[in-house]
Image (cartoon, rainbow, N blue to C red; front, side, top):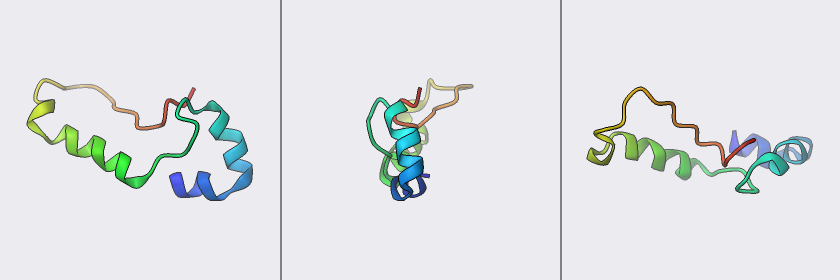
Length: 57
């Protein structure tokens, strides 16, 4: 979605002001969340939805 929101001016004007990060995320940022979830650091995480959305309000 980052590519779509980042490349379409209409979508950028609609979504970016609502993102606390102030920008669209990168694919690597989404991968970082997935890597965390499969790592031992997330061993106590269960039954939770992780939204990687830049703080979209």
